[in-house]
Image (cartoon, rainbow, N blue to C red; front, side, top):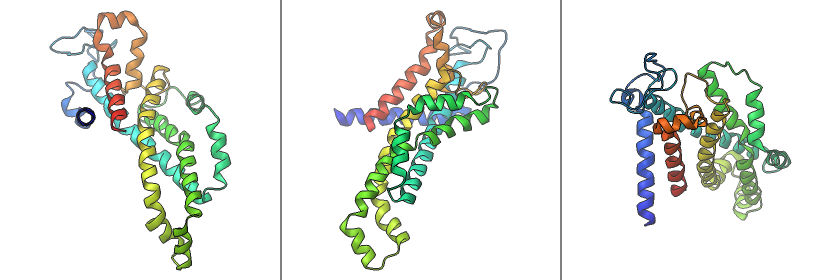
Length: 256
């Protein structure tokens, strides 16, 4: 049963990734194209998921939104991992520990919201993407740094490290050939934890109007439409971004 679930989860993620990758070819229209004569249109042959307030095709915007959220959350997670690894390695698991503990004691998601909110809301769309996911990557380094720090401290007391130094092996070679294989598994595990966390964070920011700026779509700003229950009743396709987000989160959890 577990194998079947993992296969299904992998199939879902693969399908989502392919749709995101080939969004320009699959989407019926450009994400910003407006059909002013049919705003808030119901689902039809021309618009399978209807249109929004500005007459933009919801299906096209969902495909492009998936592209942004799916591809940039891993990029932000990679930034966090690299910052955590560099800081932990530079301090060799020592000086950075206290600062890491301080950062972990702060509600980083609220801190991130504050940082994002002080920036101009009329930021250009492409710049808003870099700001949103860049700040995520910078703000989320503390937890993986704590794991890396503990592992580095343990390695400093291990017998193989003392033997390697006694044999005259240089520190760069020890780091690349011996330490990195131990840290790589931790880095992969932390990466898999951070990706869904950042996807959800972007969705939360979008609901608050602090995420990716219009006209670029993301799961966050598409979910903002759910704040109008009457619209959801008239057009159930508004729930599609939420359903897709839940499918991706469940699939990532199954594969974790």
